Length: 178
Image (cartoon, rainbow, N blue to C red; front, side, top):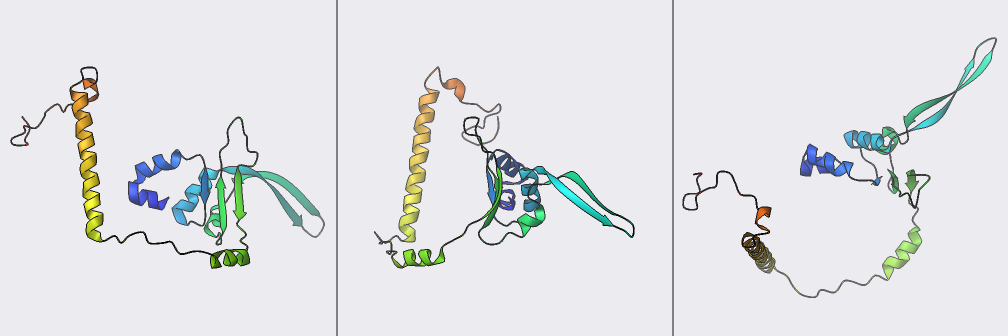
């Protein structure tokens, strides 16, 4: 979540986070862990308290609303552990939407599989100049497509309303407002 804020700003990051129905995360810290814990929600937890004094012993039970997955648990996940919540549909309801799980890898099977990996063949050599030429060609093609389509829209009476015109357009010669 911190990466979203860094790359898109706080407002856009919140929009992106709030449209996600499924949340799956490994270990995160700080504000990300807090936000994740809050998004997963709270559940009723059964608590027991035992009091012992010289003359009596008492056991009290209560129900408290606590985080389903606390910040401390999210902050201390080990490699291969995940927490999250998944959304369902009316046609396919999921009873247990919130989870904390661990992936158990068969290390020997993975090693045996890796021994049979084949190297990816190199099809051709690409240098920086070729990559940049392709980039500029694609950019030019996209610009051409946009201009062609915009001309079609401008010249079609029933589509002209789709183009917004600025209230104070710049003059072509100077680029300054009229």
